[in-house]
Length: 342
Ligand code: KG4
Ligand code: ZN
Image (tube, rainbow, N blue to C red):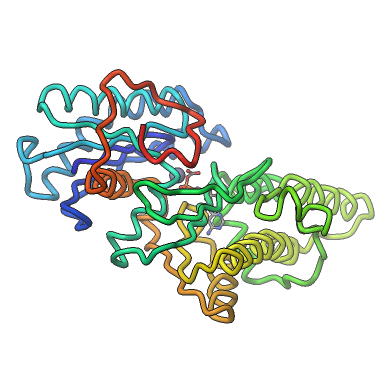
């Protein structure tokens, strides 16, 4: 299975056989976006166009294979930036047509969970998936990664990584701010400032038990910073970072563990670029251990966007016997999280 990922700023290509990773390559356009303080879709699309063929060649070389060895192709169909998705889909459709191989248009967010099968082996039935990045914060109940995914909740405003990036900007840190806030937080007191925990009030339990909201928190941090400056006090940035990070990961882990217990799930997979966050890793490990839940987090290069996640999910869909996607499929920038394959 040849997997192609191009939903945001990474061009990723990988080859898997079953659930064994054979080779891969990733190109990133992040350096071209950082001076703008955010991803510029048009720049990302152009970077995919330039990177697609060389990245494909590099992945084949890494696997010691040629295009004629490919039996099937999987590509990210959504969610993501529409121009970027279209670049990957066009490449995948061209390969499918030229090689006369079936094509599977699969879901990026579910791919973030699927990739862990290449790393830590087969999934028990069921698993909980928490996908946290700059673009998503989603909680997925996965009975079968190829056929049965239920969305329990997601962010109703900012994603976890996005909130870190915005607070990073507020504190004058370079983009993306997430890793910088993480590092500063390690030297701060997480209990110094009590920031709000979004959607955790009793009144939120009925409609938003497993949804997340981080925009109120971000505003609370902004107000706190303004207040301190107005009072002429010097900011203690590590304490602000640590208290903010504590609020984000407290909510993420509390809701995820509660969902595991509610649905009797004993294995949690965390994926997405934000899973590199050290506060999240520490608290998830602690709370999962206390609740008797096995915690699986892929190594960092498989948490950020990559081709292996799409090849892994494509291979699972193929093995399930699902029909390939029609060559006429259109990408879906807001692909529903319960649609595994188009
Ligand atoms: O998955 P990813 O590479 O790209 C998206 O699809 O968004 O995730 C990147 C996001 C960014 O918001 C980045 O700031 C955040 O994840 N991030 C972190 C850390 N590493 C990456 N946030 C907090 N702590 C980190 N260590
Ligand atoms: Zn992603």
